[in-house]
Length: 502
Length: 40
Image 1 (cartoon, chains in turn cyan, brown):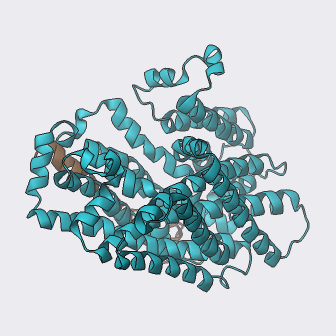
Image 2 (cartoon, one colour):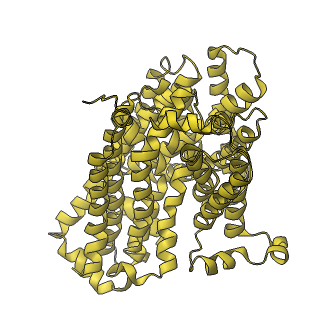
Image 3 (cartoon, chains in turn cyan, blue):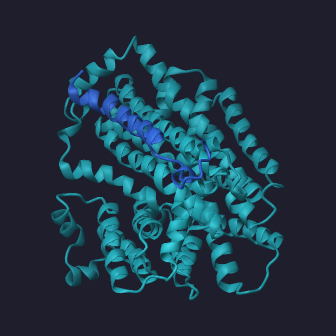
């Protein structure tokens, strides 16, 4: 590996730790500072952080690879989640932000528990366990991906790369909490955007224009020239990725951290543009890459997801290759740090402080210390999983995005918009969403005689849509509504919703 | 360039950006909606 490329990567990593160190003081005031930056972030930070924390290595490696291998169906994978996130940012984000301030809600379980006056801890515990479960697996998978990226970037072993990814993320997240995570998200978003814009532009200019890409697409035919060649179920399944966005806590808490609620619209506009440019940049890299590498066997191990670094290496100098490799690390780290912090907030804020703390006054400084320790504990669990149970980690992550969307999406949206929503509705909505996603994704054999083939059933009912987030979301929605109608809503529901809508 | 390619590479992203622009113009800030006129 070239010394300039390595220097760019090392400089980036040092910058991350520096941001963490710089943010230490700002994040030490209390849990609100550590987990939500004291609701004091600007519109740019919130916009870029909300977008980049939601896009993991999946965008820079997965989507580019999908566009390279099968053409325009990658566009459907982007369209669903970006459209949903536009709507979330313009509508639901206001309510999250306002609710957070009015009812001192720092976490997603906080919102559910306070919205329904749940003193039993049922909602808080259920939501926290689901969050910790998914987030540890999510972080574990990002560590594995980071290890691979480090090994290709710095020429070290994947295991050493995994440890390096974990050490860097842990250092700045423990030190700077949400302040550091959101600021590094901005830096990471800039690297990602720069790479996803510059690389396709260089590729197009180098080809002498857009013509050769179109010619290759027409020549390949099929999904390269016609986005509708894929079946209805496949297209709707890819659009269904959007069902994950309303329920992924590491995205939603970003909305709650905006300082001035009147800047939400600007944040929404900035975030939408950012999301579109990054998404279509990734698609263009895949399509342009097909011209430069017409045969997949020209990529290392025939791996389509290597198209981004390979195109960067082919077209630019060692300095820019360093930037492109940093963009891959940035995509991975910006998700992992946010997920780590959300898991840690569930442990300290929800389980330790709110559930076991009772009426006891716990000094804020002590809670921040415990939050830092919880961050280290969760990272330790993620490392153990990543080192020892890779299969399990990948299996978990396959449905983490959709699983969180199904568990939390309908219960949260209904809690913020429908006064008739009840505690039991939300509880059973979360449980049914989780169970449906698991059954559709990987149904245990022993349940087949009892329930039949759940995936085949939903495939038939939903016109061939088999992406688990879609049936999971719809079942959770239906169950939350039906159970809510059968049970009694809290007396102050209308007043609360009126306040957050005002 | 076929219609499909044009739609996928330009139509959809521009459509999403147009949606965002329309919402930016039409969605009212909550304070304004309540008649508090923050931006007025």
